[in-house]
Amino acid sequence: MRTSMNALDEALESPDPSTVLAGAWEALDLGERVADAVTWDGTGDELLALTAAQACLAARTLLPLPGSGRPLPLDASVIQPGHGGLAPYADLLDRAHRALAYLAEQDVQLGEAAEHAATAARALAAVREL
Image (cartoon, rainbow, N blue to C red):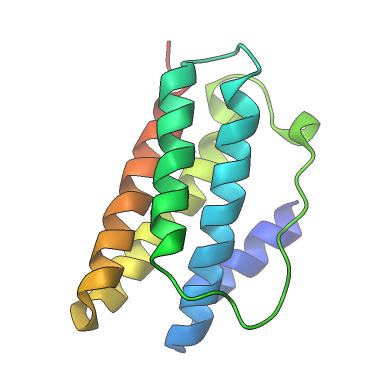
């Protein structure tokens, strides 16, 4: 999974806006699936996990579909337990937020997507804080 996350990091840091948008779409898709998985695992705040999933979906609907590729595989059993287990995914959503916010200087819709990504990152980071 780390290699796949590294590829998303590279896409989010690309100078090509279409690559950034595709990377953000994939990061939000992964974030939504992680949030969905932890919503039902009984290890944290289900409402925050649901909020994160909904925010990822809301952001993704504002972005163009990626031109190629496919969703990163996610086996829910690889999500580490405890607060730290969600940190890599929350960090990825935060990087997607920053990348979209940078592009939003040119597009209001991307600004809205960036805000949804920020909400998702905060909610997912807080799921297991208790």
